Image 1 (tube, rainbow, N blue to C red):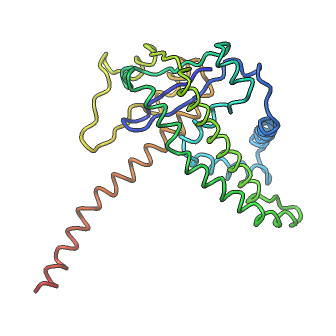
Image 2: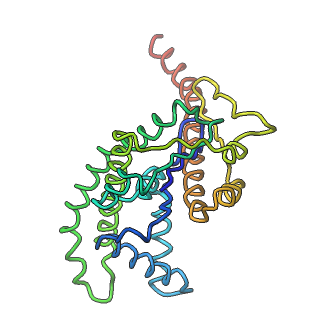
Image 3: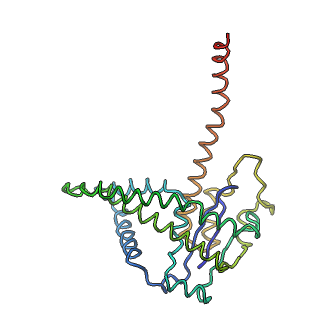
Amino acid sequence: MRLYLLPVSTRRTLLYANKLNAASHDGSLIDRGAAFAARKWAQWEKMERGWQRKVVDYGNHAFRRIPFEEWGLKSVPPLSARRREDELRGRDAVQLVFPPAAIPEHKAEGVVRRLATERQALHRQRLIWCFVGMPITAPLGLVPLVPNLPFFYLVYRAWSHWRAINGGKHVQWLLQNNLLHLAPSKELDQLYTKDGQAPADEPAGKEQMLITQKQIQDFSETLDLPAVEIELERAIWQVERALGKEQEQTEKAPEEKDKQAPEEKDKQS
């Protein structure tokens, strides 16, 4: 297995796992169910009209807003007994691939540790709320000819949080047992460097993008990972959106202060 650290901005990084020998591990019933749902979803995406097409459109709209950090942790497989044994005995070595121009080698493990742990409490809390909501939405399934979308969405989100929790635990276990083999990538460096220069340090208090939507195909081809395209597209979109909102708030702050100043003077007079 390979774990990729792909910095999206100067403060946010996408973690993505590529299972090199995925076929060697028998999937759990939950994973098989998820695979079946994915195939069914793909079939619905090919439909041009009907309620299935509408469900897919609304679903994809919602999926795009699920934090990319969660998608990254979900890409890491849960730590089964067989996988634990294979990784301990070196039969399934785990590489941590990263661009040293953007992430210095001595910081790589710290970055992956932060990504594996910082959202664990949030995922546990959201998982509990999904379980609370399931019995409430289940009776909607009694309505004829209408799929119980709220219930199925909560089921999906519960599975998603569970996978993120277990993906994070797997990464933490790898770190605790010193099973991550650092693999600085010159190929990735070339994607992050401009005119042979490393990414510039961010100005004080200002976050900057390191990659753009135009570079996604270059990443996919360089890493030979077609599946990483959608992950990068989602991550870049979310970070750009977040930075845009922060910029709007920064620009509004002086205007609000200017409006409050005359009011305070009137009160004092």
